[in-house]
Length: 441
Image 1 (cartoon, rainbow, N blue to C red):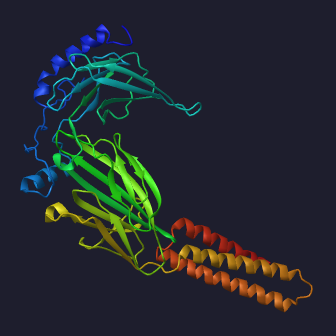
Image 2 (cartoon, one colour):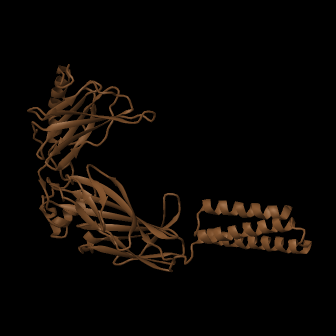
Image 3 (cartoon, rainbow, N blue to C red):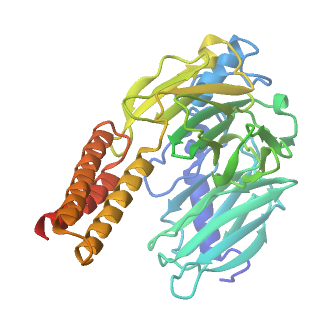
């Protein structure tokens, strides 16, 4: 068994797998014996409606809207690559099958296996191996490590497109079969069928609004879309850009006034994210501009809010109360552009009302600082022989009253959810400790 080519045992096991999976190739689904799985290249999936392949905008016709609705519901209309365990393959072996959109094998394609040996102590070590597919569209790698510290990824570059298995690990008692589908590409969005969705998360801060944009694009046609730099304009006054995670080979970058997305939108689902800030002028209300994607079919806007705040997004449903992952109060509003057959505007306008005109956290901090400073002056005065006991007593009473006033402000801010439990507990502990020192002295 050599390291550069398939060993006889691996080829024999793969041939057996292909023969045993003939029925699976005709009828996609889970393998019957549960030991291995070879994904079919013949869409649609079993039970999915037979939707004709269309191109253009989701709003072009009833047929376009129907396919867009299927796409966003998670029904894939094109074959998808897969990584699946195969017990008939020796442990430590990886078989790669490369096919076109009709499920036919592609020979002579350069397949790269990237191995990452993960180590906290010495750092990760990355190595690559490359092999060309044979006449049956097969490539393979044997004697790979099965320890949990090893992470693998199979990639194939076709023109400017990159097809990837995503990262995976090997099992201790089985090999892996990786299937990659390769499609022709286009630079024109309307030459294929692109559907986009968006979620915006707004977090008010004392000096800025933190905005996270979580975006998803579905490509339902057997064409890879390569936009050559999808440009998403940023609103005026933005600051603090933060690139987020992206699927596949997508890269999120920032230019002077826009976000640029580079990479390949292969058939299927692609997610990416980014964040930025808009200034908070500490007015009672603020209007925020949110960027949209082309072919946007629906969007949601989520605001981390206090009970005194309101949220309106132009053209959207009325905001409803909801709760975040940690139980915090929030507001959520949504718009289904596809259902209403109304293409989304270039930007969304979100109005937030009921904002505190002065940062509560800062106000409490100032009050605590003042109380502690006055407390320090009281202690200093008690050591100054030139001051009378009456003067010292008056200073102590003033310090006590200031601390009590700050406790009232702190409780009100916490009840109104202007500050969180951590800030509340820290501030209350400091104030109570200061009051105890005054009482005991």
